[in-house]
Image (cartoon, rainbow, N blue to C red; front, side, top):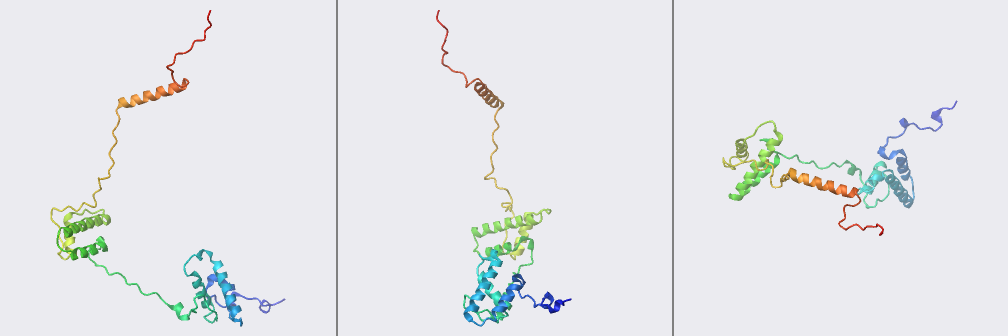
Length: 241
């Protein structure tokens, strides 16, 4: 009986690990074979054919920008950067390029006071403080107050909110620099608009409905009788004695 270990059979446990498993073991073998090719021109064509094969394995990514450059970077990564070929851009990838990390994105710092109003209210208040005093600033502050009441109702539907609460919160957020009149109403944004409200149609009277029904009935009866009555006198075909 033959021994499988001596018949040239390979087991996955004895093979090297796949560097990029999505391309499979055969692509990795082809790239490793390309490193043994001595002719530079033939080696260049061979690797370009391998890149075309890798692109055919994922046709859905063909329209992605710089996708072919990404494939060349994967080829060098599978070859452990020991492949002597020239990519289309002319710049060979380096091992340091695969270890790059994106820059850290700074987390926005928000004020902790009254976070249920949102960050936009904080920005609006800062803009109002930078405006010169006058009617324009007063109107802008009134819009801020109406928006604050709308935001409060959006996230606190079960709790009643009065204009006095909104006005007090506005003064607190602006450090007492912005205020609203006691008689100012803040329901401008939460009140439904009546400008485009459709007008109810006028109901027709019972007399008009009866007249229309009688006219339709007469039209149907005339159609059943052969097209309706004719005003022309009928010709007589009796024989003369």
